[in-house]
Image 1 (spheres, rainbow, N blue to C red):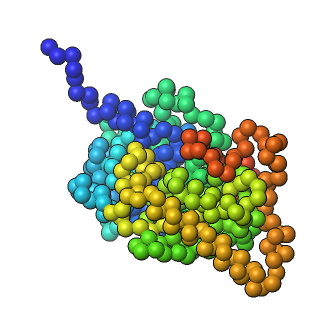
Image 2 (cartoon, rainbow, N blue to C red):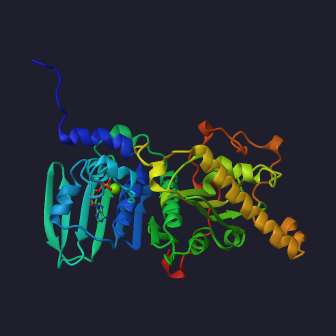
Image 3 (cartoon, rainbow, N blue to C red):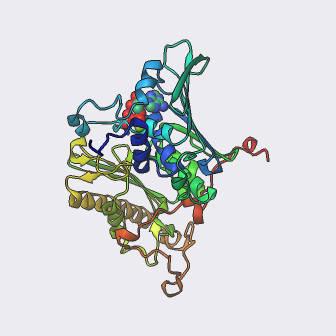
Length: 393
Ligand code: ADP
Ligand code: MG
């Protein structure tokens, strides 16, 4: 008899979880993507202990009925993709149909959803192999809770970092979501404290202000550039406003937050002549390209995409940023106030001369291999506007 066996569904989900769910931040990312895809205009994320013990995402999106929920928990079940051809035209963030079953397989998972138009909501709890459904009163939309992440996969739990680091990674994602979706109002509560809220009015600058504070907002230069079918908008900071890492740079391509070394280098290139010191400008680059010129399915966590013509993207982004920088210089020159430009650095944490810089100090043109995830909270807490009422401690 053959020794080779087909694995059961639960085992397959647990194995696959390694690709999709590495840490609490990956759970939050998948759940928030689902909320965005469900056309939510309000999304609230609450975590405890960096998400390791408790994560909850609540949205006011389309919601699901019992049949939707049952289907959503099956592997490779998705409402967003019908055939492989759809991958070239897809405008949703999700499409792999893996997130919910994998999250449910490595946490204590529960879900409440009320579909628009339905009188009651449905609560699902998953206990081991059993799925329990109950009808309950609920607001339209969906709330998903994942507790005790990796309680049943202890080996994976060992790889988690401190709760502060895990919370920082979650906050990084939420910042990027808020920047890529300024039309959605986000609330982020960590350890019982409200740490981020964005207005959701659709204005990127308002979102930047809510997240990074007035000083950053005041140092922004708008980008507005088009070449052929490609459009670049967003903001970069004045060369006088530098950061010590790339953590404050966001790249949004067709509504998707991505990592792309070409785009990072395009910024470096545009600033090269302007920046005398080591450092990185703030950037929120919003690129719009024809959907069929990108491949979004090159990474299990969907954090990278492939452009049909990387060199062209590099060139266009570089031009767009250069144009923004030149526009700013012109305005300043015609206003005959160059001194305010040169002499009034907005924020300057970077005073280390290159020779004294510690090992980890970034050089402006690092290779892709040393690009590591850096939490924006690690060294540079953004000034988040916390309503006074939120802090009751
Ligand atoms: P994918 O996002 O790749 O389709 P998921 O496993 O993340 O796969 O979700 C499966 C399906 O469950 C989605 O296609 C969607 O129809 C439904 N779904 C998940 N989360 C939500 C939500 N917050 N609101 C409404 N529908 C949801
Ligand atoms: Mg999804």
